[in-house]
Amino acid sequence: MKIPVKRLLVPTPSCDGRQKAPRYIAYTDWGDIHNPHVVICVHGLTRNCRDFDYLARALEKDCRVISMDIVGRGQSDWLEQASDYDYYPLYLSDAMSLLAHLKSQYQIPIKLDWVGISLGGLIGMILAIQPNLPVPLHKLIMSDIGPLIPATALKRIADYVGRDLRFNRFDEFKQYMKSISVSFGPLTEEQWEHMAIHSAREYDDGSIGFRYDPKIAISFKQHEITDIDLWQQWDQLKVPTLVLRGTESDILSVETAMQMQIRGVKAKIVELSGIGHAPMLMDQQQIGTVRDFILG
Image (cartoon, rainbow, N blue to C red; front, top):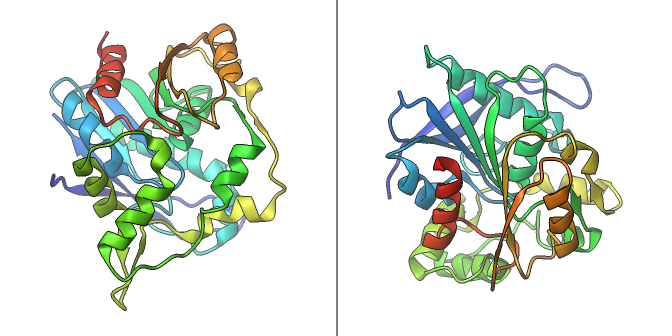
């Protein structure tokens, strides 16, 4: 499906305090641009905004749907310094810039919902507890992510993230992408093809690699891999929250999901059988669950 990609110039906060050149982040824009019910969708660690095409198509009659490429992914610019990917306020800054940009397009208040898969869910969670947001979050949907991420799962991800692999043919690339993404669950061949097309980057020599900067793996290389504990942030959350959990997930455990139901905002948890990390919000069941929560 063809949809134009828009670009927004944003500042580049830096971990070393030096002034950096501004850069572009990319996003898709579905639905009526005057609709004040806006849904922002943000992908996982190595993915891109086109993962949300199926969800956006299901929501666009009722909402304006914005899907953003995180810095260094998809069609957003790559950073010159690898260390800047390890500066987490940068991800929050990009989200705030996008919110301010969207707010400037309206003369009336916006109702804003956030849908995030994995890393995109964490960005939404941290964003939701920030004071003085340009637009406050109304609802939050998190796909297979929570405030406690086990080191064992992070080590699994570290094994493949940042490997600058190149393939001679698109079908080889697609097959490799499927092999490392089997935990997404049973997707149709059309959905795998869609994901592969928008995940592939063709280089000048004709080889094909992933459409993300290998330097995004800097955090795994520079720091000892330990559990990530964000319970303090979770307990501050007040936005109605839906959490989708793959029953085979190694990122979001049963124990963590149970705690998310009774701590902080007391999230609604929906478990999806036969899926690990992470539900990609492409099939009708997952789309229906998200749609019902947003519009209900």
